[in-house]
Length: 126
Image (cartoon, rainbow, N blue to C red; front, top):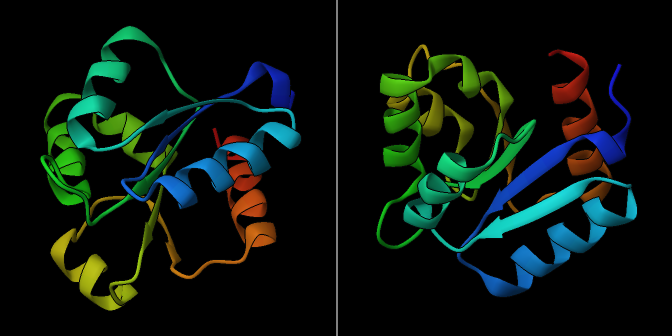
């Protein structure tokens, strides 16, 4: 099993305060963390590196999380199992819109310990 220092996490979040907080918390857990401020930047980063987990906000400018997931579903569907979605939208709405796409949902506002647990669970499932 991989150790946190061997695991890369991509945090895709347009809110700079949340992005910094999640990055800081996950780095303190030993993960290597990179950030993207929207889906376009995230797609570019995926072209350069492989990430063990993606923490993805749904509501972002340019390319939102829904479009990002649709892009992955079309080109790299196995990577969808590595996504943890964060959103203020109801989980029911998210599941309905993304029916059949496997990913974990972490409603906003989320508890940091829950985020840490979800990242660890996502890694353990790989």
